[in-house]
Image (cartoon, rainbow, N blue to C red; front, side, top):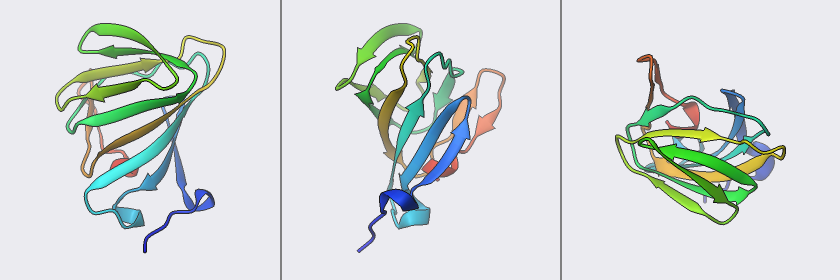
Length: 124
């Protein structure tokens, strides 16, 4: 039975945030990936277009989410559905960190506005 213990989760740092990978092909998952993201106060991540649907659940804190040019503030307990092909950006405008739990299918790729493609290891 694949179990990923908290100390075994793999951290990755990108754009000022920390992504802690729990479920991915590297840990035995065949179809889904799941990770926790720690977003420090003042973080402004670049907009990116996603190749797979993502579900983002805010565990703690507050965030400003921009999804296809529409901006909303979310609070702990809120969930955002990011459909395939959507352009998505996250900002933590507060003076407190925020924590999310995100799930997607294996193979997620993100394309930045400048055309750079990112294949995050926590989702592949």
